[in-house]
Image (cartoon, rainbow, N blue to C red; front, top):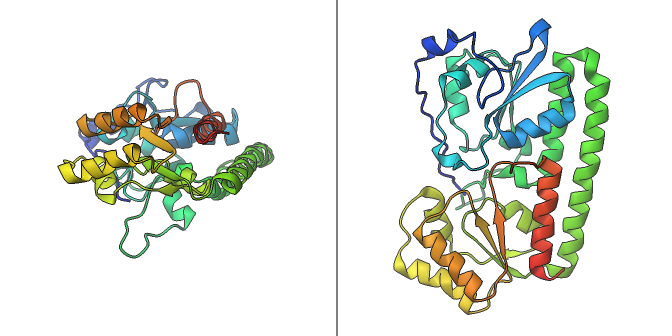
Length: 305
């Protein structure tokens, strides 16, 4: 499904941004290029930034342009410091699929330097006939497996002396991913065919892996995702999912909300349908594996596991 694209606003002209070579590292979007030729990785969100840190260990400097878990990703505005970070990056990680188009703008302004890893492209996923692509591929564990392999290749090319470290760290990470895939497969054996509802398609790849059937009216999730009004008839259809006992779990994107989603959330709670909060960026205090483990556990608990 097509997402509301994260904003592409550069608040300071590029010439000014590239002059900010004295900016200190540490804040969101600050440069993280290390001294002495240390490899620099810039990721559009902290999801991919965390994975890069896990694989690279301390051998690489990683900057996540969007790393505030309280921020609505769709209102993100790229800054001059973001521009500077991208201009100095050896490896650039973007989600792609229309999710973080601001990265294309930043890269072009920087002269398209650095190796680019576009995760949607790596996934090989394509929109099916009559549908938009669900670009939230970080909820798809097979995609993250593919991405990890490409990331190891890029890191090893950038710093061959650390290739064995990258490979070792990636092996541990992918083993954890394999465990998550097995857990979802086990849940699918028990709960395939059960109904689920969502506000937006953020967690759909995870719900699909568990075999759940999305009962949400297409017009509802599309309207919420694109920030448009939900018609009364569509809202009533959505609310009936809960009063009619059509779903066993409701996955709610807690980073974006409005009157319609709040009304639906209240209806789910009133009907006793378990609510699973989901986010688009990494919550504070979590790494990717612990975050996704929590998500799988929450869905399993909602289903009665």
